Length: 121
Image (cartoon, rainbow, N blue to C red; front, side, top):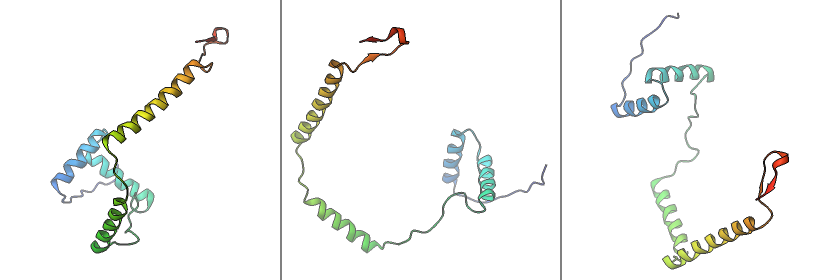
């Protein structure tokens, strides 16, 4: 057995609880998950996931400006009434029902058993 060493670190209590619950639902304890993380880090020769900064940082001002522009563009789209929404839903349901009926009334449905038992439904 390899020499073992104790590692201690502090973490947020809620974060530890959340991680523990996740790993327990996967059938392992937190210690096993941390060991797996370390082994995978060695295999990857780095973090076992991508860790990089975004290419471009957006300032608060630019973010709000973009939000307002999108909002302006969306304001040109007319709103639908509840009756219009229900009419669209009814139309789509009618189309599906018609397609299903066409398939069922046609010669498309067969009961496939063994070759000697093939019969039309």
